Length: 114
Image (cartoon, rainbow, N blue to C red; front, side, top):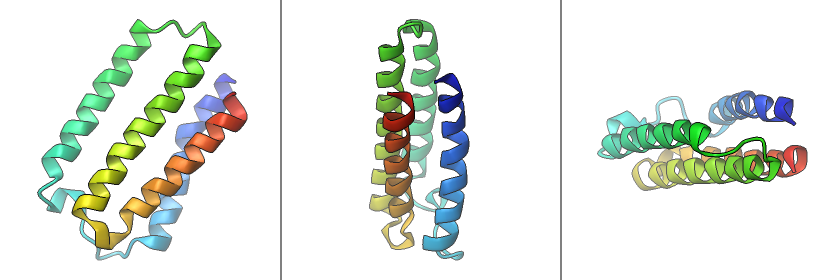
């Protein structure tokens, strides 16, 4: 199971890269060019701090805690990114890439971790 969770970030990165090549035009706006730049950065920092603190707070010897924590983290982070992409750069279709990668991440966790 730990190898399945280790492969998840690699899988998500590769899938997002391929989807961006397919759905997002090369000249599309980036989040750093919009008024949502500060929210995007703040959300990323807050997510990283929470995820890092969960490593010390939760008991990962319990498999159920680890499964549900991974599912919750993937859902919250992807949902936040999807909302910001949809709100600030809707015409670039970046939110579609984020939704597809979220679905793949959740399905992967449900199939290979649960």
